[in-house]
Image 1 (tube, rainbow, N blue to C red):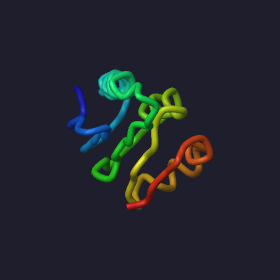
Image 2 (image 1 turned 90 degrees about the horizontal axis):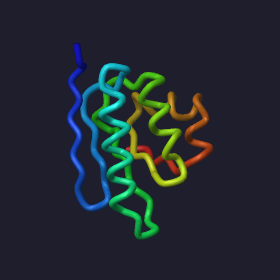
Image 3 (image 1 turned 30 degrees about the horizontal axis):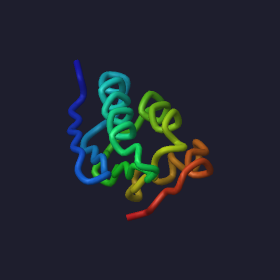
Image 4 (image 1 turned 30 degrees about the vertical axis):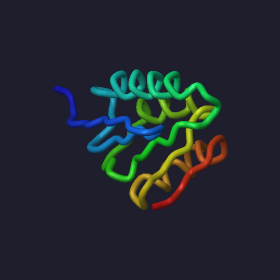
Length: 96
């Protein structure tokens, strides 16, 4: 069973809503890679996770893989995970 996840891309921002886990992390990683490639003009892709309620290690791995090309916008629920995992040391994290 795949967990509910909605992904939208608009003007250099990939917005995720729902949960990112092993059931849909491949979809998330593919959308992330596509959005990064589409914005190859030197600017970083903003990944908006403010509406993400759950992020597991598979979702984190996708973010780590693109850390050099992204900035992350997050809310108070996911922010501690990004700090503890070390992702916040590799890319800019904006707190909403």
